Amino acid sequence: MKGSDQPPSNNTTSKKRFLKRERSRDEGVDIVRNRLLSQADNLPDAPAPQDGGAAAVQQKGSSTIAVIAAICGNILVGIVKFIAAFITGSQAMISEGIHSIVDSGNGILVLFGIHQSKKPSDEDHPFGYGKELYFWTLVVAVLIFAVGGVISLVEGVSHLVHIEDARLSDPLPSLVILGISAVIEGTTLAVAIKQFNLARGKVSPLKFIDHCKDPSLYTVVLEDTAAETGLLIAFAGIVASHVTGNPLYDSLASIAIAVLLMVVAAVLLTQTKALLIGEGLNKPQTRRVIEIVESDENVVDCGRVLSMFLGPHDMLLTIDANFSPSVPAVQILRSIDRIEAGIRAEFPDATRVFIEVESLKSVQDQALAFEMMESDDEEEEREREEREAAGDDEQPAFIEFIQDKLDDIFEDDETLEDRRDTRIDEEDDLHRMR
Image (cartoon, rainbow, N blue to C red):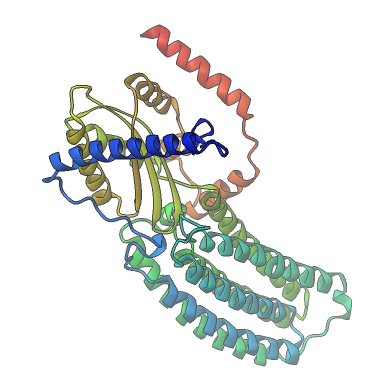
């Protein structure tokens, strides 16, 4: 109850009057509601709210299958790599053994995150636990960087510093183990890629990773790809060391594996950070939502559209809309149901859609502000398309993707105050033009 509606504690008569007034107000609200509902008997049933958003949409690719296969493969591979490292003393094999054990632990954490994200919402977490997966994927990225990358780098540099004490042993055990590991890792990578391809459809792999809201679908692929690449690097280092009689190449292979792990960790950190902060629909998708709203005959204008993924398949969507003043309440209810149905048909991950009726001026101001916003990602995409059309884009797509991710981490953006002043100036210019 609000402050002024609290019943007096020491006055029985006042208490009775208060309770009577509250009962009358509730009855009045019920009368209005019942009248609206009696006029809306023919309204179509609104889609039922979906709980436990992470499981709300069945996706073709199953990340759980890929994760379990990767865990089993990495445990087996890690054991045989450490056996080979013990026999031969190869630093590259030690780095690869660390890599496999870290990947096994990471797979368990991702599997735990998938399980936790499917827990239904409760009183303390009304929007569910979908972001648990994002948290545990972030932990995985940190472990890949710190435990996998840094330890491998330290091992390689330490061996390089004391290279005069290094001795070369029979490379055959290491090469046999690397061959066995490559077969096992290749099998788990094939399973992961199969599920990854089922999930991405016709979208390019790099674009899918950049826009995917389920990090478990690509985390295993990135880890297993790094594992196969690491095996090739270790193989090259061992062979080069024994062919030349110089253990330097074995140490360099260990350092190269460490750098590889750090690059993979940087990609995962950037992607997961965006999801944890609260990533939503991209600009073209937001414009499509506006088109759906404004296509309804009773809507005058659509204002602010806010979206945020609460889990891999659980999106919160809020919409401010202005309806024609002449439209009766029952028609507004019908319009809202039509809009929600249209949005869910095109965006099945929109499990929670809230449409708020706003004044015309408020909606127009919000629409104007939305039109003024230009994202840096879109500008970069346009520049990239222009370079590709002109044939000037000489960088491989993967290198450019990695550079974009590193730029996202280290870029020095404008201050919030500068951005706000710039936006206000642009809005003033636009109003004067009108």
